[in-house]
Length: 453
Image (tube, rainbow, N blue to C red):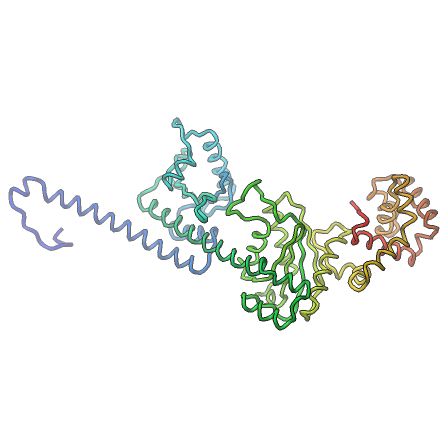
């Protein structure tokens, strides 16, 4: 005591009563508490510093692991593994699986529990999960709702670990709230504000477009490309609200925002459209094509039950071409005859140019003129000669490839080809004729008059 707080003289009666030892014990407890609070404060200051730099949940977990050296697991509301740091991912998945069993059975060893109720009431729960480790598990909160769980993994926990977990949850909640607020703002400005719809429908002149885009922090740049994604914008992976209440359009938008790519996004009942400023990607040294492939991989991994397809337009340096670029992306999406995940307008060749420049009534007239006899025969006989013609020309008039595509025998395919030639009264192996027929078939697909599985 004298070394910290000066010299004290105790009377003989005070010494006999044990008062000095009581004071020493009290001081020891106070110093321990002070050290714990200081350690927690140091942790908080460093974690907040990272939060202010804009880290997300997974990077915040990485930062906390660096500060504490305690392994961390992030799980969703169903205690399904999302992310881990400081543990082998496969081992972390096993731990998540064990925790799900504990929650399902509602037992912790010999003691009945209701883990979710304990977490909601106590905020943080220490759980003996196995002989190898314990968990310090706490809820991840977004706008007052629990959206997942964060766990420290360790053989035992002290008071400082509890304090650090409390601070981690608090910082994580603020981070979630901040991110959701930013996303809401972006969605309102970029999606609900309708700027992209105005651009698509040519309702604003380029000067106003630039001003409005700059006002909401979007750099349009000097070169543009359109993306249209086919999916279900109202889809939720868990049947209800997913983690954070994020549906497809929000997940799509957040993917760009988290990579510092502020772009304009729009949606309708079937598709999501995005205007991609090529200059913006170049600024960050990103190839647009590689980025779109990574985006598609992310979406398929996050929403595995949705059959995503993407249509990409050509590029233009004129804002006045944006309605045309949008139509190009739609055409690419609808005319995906090779069943590709990503279809580029530039790969469509003549049929793309036909649709971009032609009158729809004229294109439908051309389609009916070329194929009406074959279409009428199919309707009357319930046959698939039109489909056969499509795959036959697409395969380069290769009998073997087209028979395989149609799941037919070689003889059966030869018979169909002969019948098609008779109905159309044309040599379908002639280059010029086959090109016109294939153009008409592709036109029918884009118009929605013809379906090819």
